[in-house]
Image 1 (cartoon, rainbow over the protein chains, first blue to last red):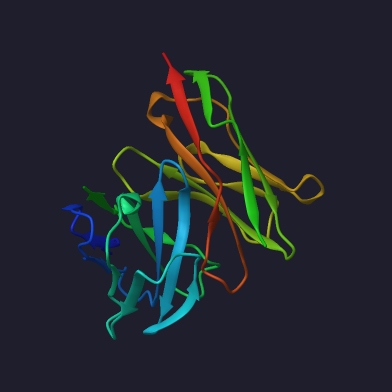
Image 2 (cartoon, rainbow over the protein chains, first blue to last red; image 1 turned 60 degrees about the vertical axis):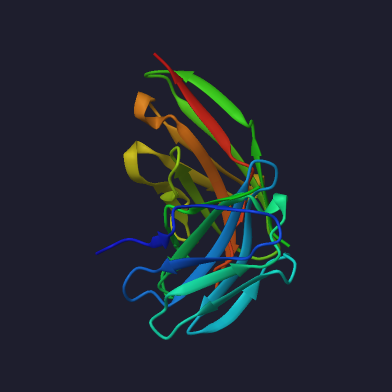
Length: 113
Length: 113
Protein backbone atom coordinates (compact mmCIF):
# COMPACT_ATOMS: atom_id res chain seq x y z
CA UNK A 1 0.00 0.00 0.00
CA UNK A 2 1.43 3.37 -0.98
CA UNK A 3 2.15 5.80 1.83
CA UNK A 4 1.13 9.41 2.25
CA UNK A 5 2.51 11.57 -0.53
CA UNK A 6 3.05 15.31 -0.45
CA UNK A 7 3.86 17.66 -3.29
CA UNK A 8 5.96 19.57 -3.83
CA UNK A 9 8.75 18.47 -1.50
CA UNK A 10 10.50 21.84 -1.57
CA UNK A 11 9.19 25.31 -2.27
CA UNK A 12 10.68 28.79 -2.22
CA UNK A 13 8.41 31.81 -2.14
CA UNK A 14 8.72 35.50 -1.32
CA UNK A 15 6.84 37.49 1.26
CA UNK A 16 3.32 38.41 0.25
CA UNK A 17 2.87 35.52 -2.15
CA UNK A 18 0.52 32.64 -1.57
CA UNK A 19 1.20 28.93 -1.74
CA UNK A 20 -0.77 25.71 -2.09
CA UNK A 21 0.49 22.38 -0.79
CA UNK A 22 -0.99 19.03 -1.69
CA UNK A 23 -1.40 15.78 0.21
CA UNK A 24 -2.61 12.38 -0.99
CA UNK A 25 -3.54 10.08 1.91
CA UNK A 26 -3.15 6.35 2.12
CA UNK A 27 -5.84 4.62 0.10
CA UNK A 28 -8.98 4.17 2.21
CA UNK A 29 -8.05 6.81 4.77
CA UNK A 30 -10.66 9.54 5.07
CA UNK A 31 -9.03 11.72 7.71
CA UNK A 32 -6.22 14.10 6.77
CA UNK A 33 -4.44 16.34 9.25
CA UNK A 34 -1.85 19.05 8.69
CA UNK A 35 0.98 20.07 11.00
CA UNK A 36 3.59 22.81 10.90
CA UNK A 37 7.09 22.04 12.17
CA UNK A 38 9.54 24.82 13.02
CA UNK A 39 12.69 24.84 15.18
CA UNK A 40 11.17 27.38 17.54
CA UNK A 41 7.59 26.19 17.93
CA UNK A 42 8.03 22.49 17.23
CA UNK A 43 5.15 20.49 15.79
CA UNK A 44 1.83 22.30 15.81
CA UNK A 45 -1.55 21.11 14.62
CA UNK A 46 -3.09 23.18 11.82
CA UNK A 47 -6.36 21.43 10.97
CA UNK A 48 -8.02 18.12 10.24
CA UNK A 49 -10.40 17.19 7.46
CA UNK A 50 -12.72 14.23 7.33
CA UNK A 51 -15.06 13.47 4.45
CA UNK A 52 -14.51 16.95 2.96
CA UNK A 53 -15.35 18.74 6.23
CA UNK A 54 -13.01 20.53 8.57
CA UNK A 55 -13.41 18.67 11.83
CA UNK A 56 -10.83 20.37 14.00
CA UNK A 57 -8.70 23.48 13.77
CA UNK A 58 -5.55 24.64 15.51
CA UNK A 59 -4.62 28.12 16.62
CA UNK A 60 -3.37 29.63 13.38
CA UNK A 61 -4.43 32.85 11.63
CA UNK A 62 -7.00 32.85 8.87
CA UNK A 63 -4.22 33.07 6.26
CA UNK A 64 -3.94 29.32 6.70
CA UNK A 65 -6.75 27.39 5.10
CA UNK A 66 -7.38 23.97 3.70
CA UNK A 67 -9.82 21.76 1.92
CA UNK A 68 -10.43 18.14 1.16
CA UNK A 69 -11.76 16.62 -2.01
CA UNK A 70 -14.13 13.71 -2.49
CA UNK A 71 -11.19 11.35 -3.11
CA UNK A 72 -9.77 12.39 0.32
CA UNK A 73 -6.86 14.29 -1.20
CA UNK A 74 -6.25 17.52 0.67
CA UNK A 75 -4.69 20.87 -0.01
CA UNK A 76 -3.62 23.61 2.31
CA UNK A 77 -3.18 27.20 1.30
CA UNK A 78 -1.22 29.98 2.93
CA UNK A 79 -1.91 33.49 1.71
CA UNK A 80 0.17 36.64 2.17
CA UNK A 81 3.24 34.69 3.19
CA UNK A 82 5.41 35.93 6.04
CA UNK A 83 9.01 35.04 6.85
CA UNK A 84 7.75 33.13 9.90
CA UNK A 85 5.78 30.77 7.70
CA UNK A 86 9.03 29.08 6.69
CA UNK A 87 8.61 25.56 8.00
CA UNK A 88 8.20 21.90 7.23
CA UNK A 89 4.53 21.22 6.59
CA UNK A 90 3.53 17.66 7.37
CA UNK A 91 0.40 15.88 6.30
CA UNK A 92 -0.91 12.80 8.10
CA UNK A 93 -3.71 10.43 7.23
CA UNK A 94 -5.74 8.11 9.39
CA UNK A 95 -8.51 5.56 9.04
CA UNK A 96 -10.96 6.92 11.56
CA UNK A 97 -11.23 3.63 13.43
CA UNK A 98 -7.51 3.19 14.09
CA UNK A 99 -7.22 4.66 17.61
CA UNK A 100 -5.95 7.91 16.19
CA UNK A 101 -2.89 6.28 14.60
CA UNK A 102 -1.70 8.73 11.99
CA UNK A 103 0.65 8.04 9.11
CA UNK A 104 2.82 10.95 8.07
CA UNK A 105 4.08 12.00 4.68
CA UNK A 106 7.63 13.26 4.06
CA UNK A 107 6.56 16.88 4.28
CA UNK A 108 6.90 19.99 2.16
CA UNK A 109 9.77 22.29 3.08
CA UNK A 110 8.59 25.88 2.53
CA UNK A 111 11.12 28.70 2.55
CA UNK A 112 9.85 32.27 2.50
CA UNK A 113 12.37 34.92 1.44
CA UNK B 1 -6.25 20.84 27.52
CA UNK B 2 -3.60 18.30 26.78
CA UNK B 3 0.15 18.83 26.87
CA UNK B 4 3.37 16.86 26.66
CA UNK B 5 6.76 17.52 28.23
CA UNK B 6 9.86 15.75 27.04
CA UNK B 7 12.70 15.98 29.52
CA UNK B 8 15.98 16.62 27.75
CA UNK B 9 16.15 18.14 24.30
CA UNK B 10 19.32 16.17 23.63
CA UNK B 11 20.32 12.71 24.87
CA UNK B 12 23.62 11.05 24.06
CA UNK B 13 24.38 7.37 24.72
CA UNK B 14 27.05 4.90 23.68
CA UNK B 15 26.32 2.16 21.19
CA UNK B 16 25.03 -0.86 23.10
CA UNK B 17 23.88 1.21 26.09
CA UNK B 18 20.36 1.63 27.40
CA UNK B 19 18.25 4.31 25.74
CA UNK B 20 15.78 6.16 27.98
CA UNK B 21 13.75 9.07 26.62
CA UNK B 22 11.37 10.71 29.06
CA UNK B 23 7.85 11.90 28.41
CA UNK B 24 5.28 13.27 30.82
CA UNK B 25 1.77 14.20 29.77
CA UNK B 26 -1.14 16.20 31.03
CA UNK B 27 -4.66 15.23 30.07
CA UNK B 28 -8.08 15.68 31.65
CA UNK B 29 -9.40 12.62 29.84
CA UNK B 30 -7.91 9.15 29.32
CA UNK B 31 -5.13 9.75 26.84
CA UNK B 32 -3.87 8.01 23.78
CA UNK B 33 -0.07 8.27 23.77
CA UNK B 34 2.40 7.87 20.93
CA UNK B 35 6.09 7.91 20.23
CA UNK B 36 7.23 8.97 16.78
CA UNK B 37 10.73 9.06 15.28
CA UNK B 38 11.96 11.49 12.65
CA UNK B 39 15.09 10.99 10.59
CA UNK B 40 16.68 13.96 8.81
CA UNK B 41 14.62 15.33 5.94
CA UNK B 42 11.84 12.83 6.52
CA UNK B 43 8.38 12.74 8.02
CA UNK B 44 7.38 11.07 11.26
CA UNK B 45 7.29 7.31 11.71
CA UNK B 46 5.20 5.73 14.45
CA UNK B 47 7.26 3.69 16.92
CA UNK B 48 4.47 2.64 19.27
CA UNK B 49 1.15 3.68 20.76
CA UNK B 50 -0.81 3.30 23.99
CA UNK B 51 -4.58 3.16 23.67
CA UNK B 52 -5.71 1.92 27.11
CA UNK B 53 -4.93 -1.74 26.58
CA UNK B 54 -1.66 -3.13 28.01
CA UNK B 55 0.39 -0.59 29.93
CA UNK B 56 3.67 -1.97 28.56
CA UNK B 57 3.73 -1.33 24.86
CA UNK B 58 6.21 -2.87 22.44
CA UNK B 59 7.02 -1.09 19.22
CA UNK B 60 9.24 -1.38 16.23
CA UNK B 61 13.04 -1.52 16.19
CA UNK B 62 13.22 -2.94 19.74
CA UNK B 63 11.64 0.07 21.46
CA UNK B 64 9.07 -0.17 24.22
CA UNK B 65 7.27 2.23 26.55
CA UNK B 66 5.38 1.89 29.79
CA UNK B 67 2.27 3.89 30.61
CA UNK B 68 2.25 4.93 34.28
CA UNK B 69 -0.93 6.75 35.16
CA UNK B 70 0.19 7.60 38.71
CA UNK B 71 3.27 9.34 37.32
CA UNK B 72 1.57 10.64 34.13
CA UNK B 73 4.55 9.28 32.26
CA UNK B 74 5.17 7.35 29.07
CA UNK B 75 8.95 6.91 28.87
CA UNK B 76 10.54 5.25 25.84
CA UNK B 77 13.29 2.65 26.30
CA UNK B 78 15.51 0.38 24.27
CA UNK B 79 17.90 -2.04 25.98
CA UNK B 80 20.78 -1.66 23.54
CA UNK B 81 21.32 1.38 21.33
CA UNK B 82 22.33 1.02 17.70
CA UNK B 83 23.92 3.64 15.51
CA UNK B 84 20.81 3.63 13.32
CA UNK B 85 18.73 4.86 16.30
CA UNK B 86 20.22 8.34 15.97
CA UNK B 87 17.24 10.57 15.18
CA UNK B 88 14.73 12.92 16.79
CA UNK B 89 12.01 11.40 18.91
CA UNK B 90 8.62 12.93 19.64
CA UNK B 91 6.08 12.00 22.28
CA UNK B 92 2.48 12.92 21.49
CA UNK B 93 -0.91 12.77 23.15
CA UNK B 94 -4.45 12.77 21.85
CA UNK B 95 -7.85 11.81 23.13
CA UNK B 96 -10.30 9.22 21.91
CA UNK B 97 -12.24 10.39 18.91
CA UNK B 98 -9.94 13.29 18.07
CA UNK B 99 -7.24 13.12 15.43
CA UNK B 100 -5.37 16.13 16.78
CA UNK B 101 -1.96 15.18 18.13
CA UNK B 102 -0.25 17.40 20.70
CA UNK B 103 3.50 16.91 20.52
CA UNK B 104 6.34 17.41 22.92
CA UNK B 105 9.32 19.50 21.84
CA UNK B 106 11.30 16.47 20.79
CA UNK B 107 14.49 14.78 21.98
CA UNK B 108 17.48 14.44 19.69
CA UNK B 109 19.21 11.10 20.32
CA UNK B 110 22.90 10.81 19.49
CA UNK B 111 24.68 7.46 19.54
CA UNK B 112 28.41 7.45 20.25
CA UNK B 113 30.50 4.63 18.74
